Amino acid sequence: MKRAFLVLACVLSLCSFAPHAQAKDNERLTFVAGPVGGDWYSLGGSIGEIVKRTVPGVQVTVTTGGGISNGPMIEKGKADMGLSQAMLYHAQENGLEPYASLPKAKNLSAIGYVGYVLQAYFLVKDDSPLKSIEQMIEEKYPVRMVLTTRSATPELAVRRLLAEYGVTYEDIESWGGKISFVGFAEAEGMISDGHCDVYVGPVLGAIVQMVTTNKMRLLPWKESVIDEVCRKYAYDKQLLPKGKYNFVEKDTPCMAESNIILVRKDMPEELVYNITRAICENADTIRASGPTYTGFNAEHMVQNVGGAFHPGAERYFREQGWIK
Image (cartoon, rainbow, N blue to C red; front, top):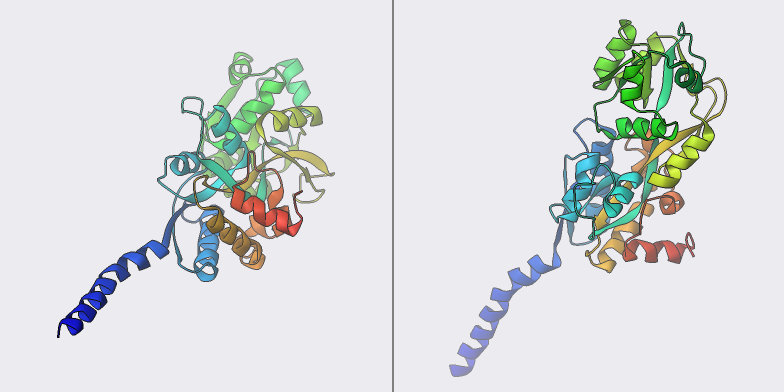
């Protein structure tokens, strides 16, 4: 009887520890993506599904987020992974705008690069007398310029490019010009209605409609200016190919924001290694998540991310021979 009691006690003891052990084995991760309906949200959903499907014991909850807010969320431990940009990762680790008022990041690392968005198309209406950005500056032309909302990443890109020419928004306004900071839909309306004659920003959302219904001309940024901004702030330089839009008459160097996956630096190396491998081995799922990522190539994940890779991601890349 005594022996039976001891066996029963051992069984009950093991059962009481089983749920705890199971919970410890399950990793529950939060992934911050972008607004519902945007390509970041769909990409985040694809990454979450890849990880849940292929990395045993890992559950991923994908939540809405934004380019500027995602890095601080991960840094503070309010999220485990998320989408960001190389220039934002670089800025957060170096105390640059838009994070100049925050402590420098200590708990961020990168899994890798997933694609890019071309920025700062300088588009003028076809009847504008402007033939170049340099002419605008030399003549102090009173341009009516519409940009994305203030302190959004496309607006920050424009401000940095103008700064390399020694020009500020205040300078343009002192010439009699006007700067408007609005959303894409409102920007399209202001150009179409004739309230502005210059748009500077990415061709996304309603801007696609704008360049379809309005005859626009592209004024290229000086390549040395693009190179310097890329060097300072971890942007990319990409080639805007002839014919991509009706205003692109020849292959043109263009500044781009690199989209990247960030992760907490203190996440276990083996876990991040397995997540990185899962993403790389399911490239088709990434490519299917939206038009920005149709050219995704796993080998390109080692491109510009703006800072250091997580050791788990770096180990996987070294095994593949993609970095030395």
